[in-house]
Image (cartoon, rainbow, N blue to C red; front, side):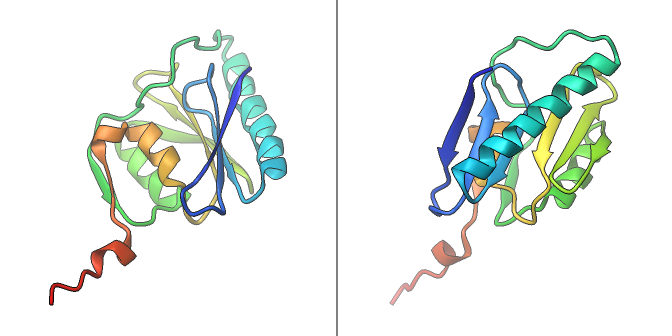
Length: 145
């Protein structure tokens, strides 16, 4: 499994995704901890498919939800509420990860880090870059003198 690690523009957050497993993400403040969280996320993702005797998906990483979103900060709990409105339910939750499964399309899974602020990189992967508007409060204070 190829893991892709990106550094968030804030310079303090690292985001990991698995190229082969659509919807499998982790987030951490250090690359070392991120690799541990990615291993846990991949194992959780695999166990979910194995429990239902389903093969792992082999499709490319693409948006999961076709909705437009405008945000400044979204926590995992807020994302859980949004996902539940889109036919996802919480299958597993612990201190590090949440696993959601789509009730209409049971082959669709989403593993998210359990954090107070989800990375904009993860949010743009879930919704697609064209559907995401990140509103940074610092950018909104424009002096028009």
